[in-house]
Length: 162
Image (cartoon, rainbow, N blue to C red; front, side, top):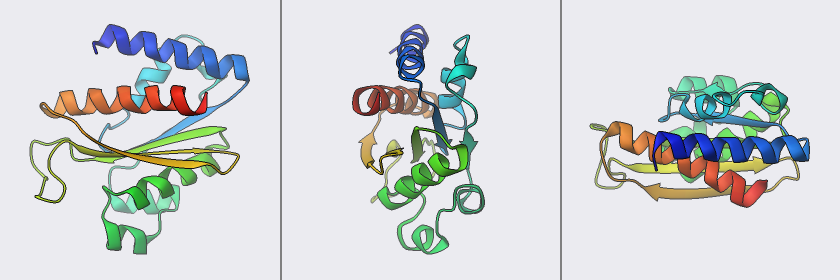
């Protein structure tokens, strides 16, 4: 998917949020704010996006989103358990209707046999209490992994929550 297609996806997400009177937030690690940028690239996004969180370190995940230190120690930042807590923490902190989170290994370094480069976990939470997590593995360089993660997060939010 190209940057132009990402823009179109962001517009559709924004239109749905606005039509439903919903607010979205995001808690990002490996995407470094790319999801928030994609959302706010659309004029009028202040009608459905108030704030997002770039929590690159474990300390930031704990302090800003309330991810338990025990969860981080037991499972690592790139895990289902952590992205679930990130999404729930962002939902609460931003008082949004829908939250998405992402934590992964964009590379080129940092991978392991258990969690190779391109491994990305996503979390989604909504006010009803529903929480969803998905794991993906993306190919390509750092930029490609981050772009694919941004697209996947927005498309899944659209398909599952909007």
